[in-house]
Length: 525
Image (tube, helix red, strand yellow):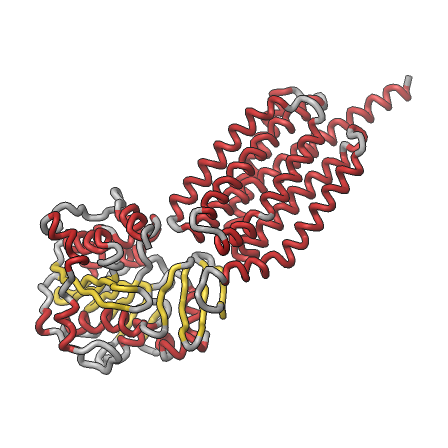
């Protein structure tokens, strides 16, 4: 009698332990699921652009996959543990190789293949994740846990795991491992959970050893990917750039790539070209010297963006400047510009000058918080290809710039290409003008970029005929400035057809229509 009771107690304890393992398993695979979800969003943002669009699509597709997977799970009524194990095997191998494969497809297959692959793998991992939880809930119920309790506990583990996964990706995995190693590492976690559950329930599974051998084989492949996949992916990524990569880093905010070939050094941020050393002086001379001629005082200068130091290099040619405040969000870019000898040769160590004060802050937030007035504000920010950058091209942002200018001050804004993206360029001009400032439009041919546009603005009209170049330059002369304000038919034909700029609405935080205009324009180039 005692032996019988002892046996029952042991069975109950075993069932209780197994149910606890199921809850732990559900929490861990949920962590992995949310990491894969945000990883796919990050991949799309980096390779395909428009972070908000890519995160929206990947989250939507992932959740749709989960719903379909949960519906499909109704058909799994037998061999619940073995089904869960093989689901995790599939998540491990597909998810583990997702980033690696994405870079390969981007490098070797036609445009659009990478987007198709990303959305497909997002759906597959979402569907497999959707199957996981109902299977675990059903198994917990089979172990004697009431259905309402098993559902609540597994879902709690799932939701709590989701929070942990998101935090791990943002603060640990992405900055420390990068996107390729993170995928392999998380795949190994899924695999480890599957092998542990397989061992815990081995007495229920016929031929469990062969399933374990399959899992171990997958593990060997994933470990190989963890140690060697990033190096291969680097060779894939190299094909995305024209010249050999000499520096690569993934900061908290963006991927930084420096290339060099035959004396041409190029800086890329999230895949977008920032400058080529062969012709960057054309861009920076036009961005700086006309606006410096527009104002009478050069005491206080503000540079928004420009972490590469090239704008500051041009500004330091003016001896009457008292202070240059440079606001750049990413310390990694500034540190590169201050320490990499390729960039130091270009910017002439400008960022270490005692007149230069660097602040690492969002440009919008800086303008909201500062009370200082500036004689010149130079805006050298990346193009408005996502929501985070779009806010720096809005009526609200340019209003803050207007308010931070001295009454006789002026600003110069880089404004994309009037040839490749005319609606974008003229919308930016219209948005600046809508703040009440007087504007003048400039453009210049830059071989590495094409024809590029700028907008000068201030409370006073721009004295185009009086602008002169007072410092040494490689390209710009006083006689050229008036010509930079003249646009060809293909650059202002949109205005001629529609009549002034009345058909273009200012870009605002509430109505960020500039993003779609930008995407539509650059899809053709």
